[in-house]
Structures are given as structure tokens and as C-alpha cells.
Length: 310
Image 1 (tube, one colour):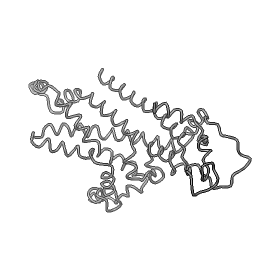
Image 2 (spheres, one colour):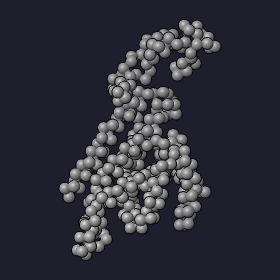
Image 3 (tube, one colour):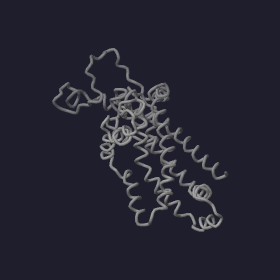
Image 4 (tube, one colour):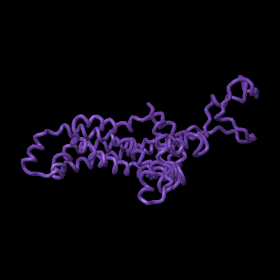
């Protein structure tokens, strides 16, 4: 039902005013012009002089006009490109990192492993407000923790992560990697614990080294976890909003260098992007992303089939 209503909204004219709104004046029950009583529809009140000749009602539906508008919007292309880079980089960093951290946890003594596992899960359990505060401190100008602990000790110039267009998107990627790597470690750890110990015992008898065991036993046994985690990160990346909003305030950053898809949807649907409540265009934009996300997920699953046959 929400998907059907979204499609209906995407086909509507953004300038269309329903009859129940036309009947609402600036005041009393029958539009007597009083501003002291009645209900005022602030969304559709115009304070400009009205053109008496332009009284023709707007058509409710415009067909695929909103989709054409979105396709020609360069800012939508920018948001889509940023989101694709954001998703790709998050997957490329988080999956290998989580795999090796899970493999490391398996070598840790049993009493310490639960503590380290909990610490890795902790970032994903943070509330959005806590996450915003942490990363504002982490990326904040010259005094930010990342500059003080890593960039400056390496002899490099401090980076203004949130005001330099070259580093806004990397900052968002780092935030996503920090937040979700621990969860993916848990996925990998569960998959690795399910591998029969007899496989490792046979490899030890054969004299296989650690790298050979990882490449021939561990990784093939958790390939299904790789696919699951990749799908999780793709869906989360295309739906990501809170992280970017907490850091950039819904603006997309300098030169829209950190503008993600859902952030731009928010700007279009509410004042700040297009300057109007353009819900039909926002709905059209959302629906256009559905086949794109489905294509990306298809490629992930297709890659899984190729890995299974390899």
C-alpha cells in the first residue's frame, strides 16, 4: 500500500491544490478573510498579489513529468554518484576488515573474546545523537581527535574534514565503517564457528600454513556471509540519512560533496533544497532508486553464484 500510494503521488502535479484546501481561506468558516478564527493552511498561503485572470484549476496528474524532471536534475545525479561511491567504499573497507578481525578473535583466549566482541558491537548500538557528538569531536577542525592522534603525528598538515570538499565523503565512509564493522565481525564469527574442526585438523596433518588454511577452508566456508553482509551494507548505504544529517545538517556539505540520496530527498520534500514542499518529485526520485538498488543486489548475488562455481 505505501508503494502504491508513492507511485500515485509521483504522478501528481506538484502545483495541484485539492478542493478541501481551496475552500480554506485566511480565516473563518467560509473564508471571510479573518485571521483571528478558523484554520489557516500555512502550506498554501500566498502573500503575493493574486492574478485574477489565472483561475484555471491545475490538473491533478502530470504522468511521468516528475520522473523527467528528476532525470534532468544535475543535483540528483550528484547525490546518486556520491551514494554509489559511499556504498562501494564502505563495502570495500568494512568487509575485509571485518573478516580479518573475526579471524583474529578466533585466536583470542575464550575469556577475553566476549569482551572484545562487545566492544566491536558497541558502535552499532550507539544512538544517532551520541554518534553525532562523537564524530563532531572526531572530525572537528585542527583540534579533532583524528588530526591530533593520526594526521599531525605523521607529520602531515591537519585536515578540515567537514569543510574540505575532498574529505567530506571520506569522513562519511569512515563513520559508516566504524559503525557497522563490528556487526559484520559478529556475522563472520558465527560463520567461522560453524566450520567443522575436522577440516582444520586435516589441514594441519597435511602441513598447510595459516594463509593456505584461510584461503582454502575459512573463506570458502563463509562466502555466504560475505553476500549477506554486502546486501546489508548496500541497503543501508542507499537508505543512509542519520549519519550524514548529524555531521552535515542535511546540507550535503561544501559543494554538495557529501550529498547522499536520502539527504537530497529530504531537501526536495521539505524547504531547503528546492525551496518548496515538492513531495511528487521526491516520490518519483525514491521510486527511480528502486530498480537501481535491485540491479546492485542482483550483481551481488550474481557474483556469489560465480564464486560458488569457482
